Length: 234
Image 1 (cartoon, helix red, strand yellow):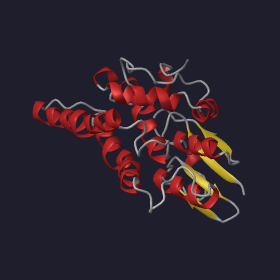
Image 2 (image 1 turned 60 degrees about the vertical axis):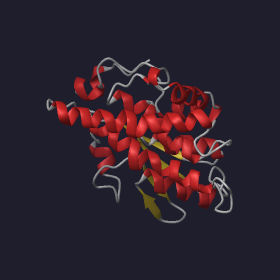
Image 3 (image 1 turned 90 degrees about the horizontal axis):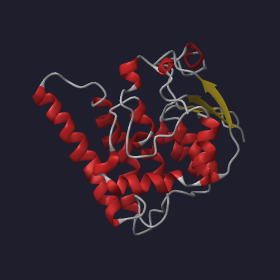
Image 4 (image 1 turned 60 degrees about the horizontal axis):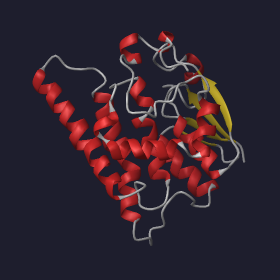
């Protein structure tokens, strides 16, 4: 089995590297550099990935390619991970696992991306802020006040999915301050302490300063015009 992860620097494809490290399964990374914000030609040139999506994974043994991070995570867990880091349908916390596994891409990340570019319309901006801080982050913080991990007492893939969104995504925006979300901040520190996370980030983005503390950057890479600003480096 050879999994090839096409990893775009400072992107959500870090999730897949993190997953493979947690599962301790072999993989190969092909690094791609933004130019300076969007996908480079090297990523668009990968067969089957004309739009330049990342993560993009090739499973050469099965002749399969996948481009959606949630689908990739489920594929790897069930095809090569023996179901580890997922929750069985018969488990009492199965519904919670499903809810929080899909929360990142269905709720949290869209609100983060929507807030990347502030609106001059005060009503629109107030709506965006409410949806992000109360409708997404507030709900997540409340959950983590009651539970060590998002799906319950055990670390699962439901914790892998939003880690990027709460941390590295802040380089692109919005530049969140997590001080008002102490339970999320505690959870971030717990995830960041995992050896698999540390190995994954060192392999995927060795130059990047990890955004695992409360304060985000003063200016986002979107505001600065991309990675050339260098504000993301250690």
